[in-house]
Length: 134
Image (cartoon, rainbow, N blue to C red):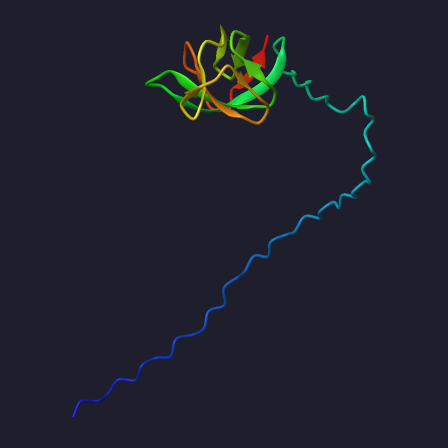
């Protein structure tokens, strides 16, 4: 039989560990914030107020029918045939005389406050446009 060779035990080797040197950290003291003067605060630019067209607000456009060029208007004041109105909106600026006015497809000559009328218009108007009497 062959002799078994004994394995030699490995010797433990100590490794040198370098310690990191910590630099001292300077502590900062938080100062109490002092209120800034009003003049030092940045002023917001003033908002431009929309320029109101001359005339009295009489209603708003609630719907537009492009195939017949008619607008549905909810009135806040009375309106009659022949009066000059102005429709003003974000992209709309239209002035015209009232030539055709209807309620439920029936021609009328006068409309009172609270009525929802159909009005023939000469160009496109949009929902939410304001209607003024000149």
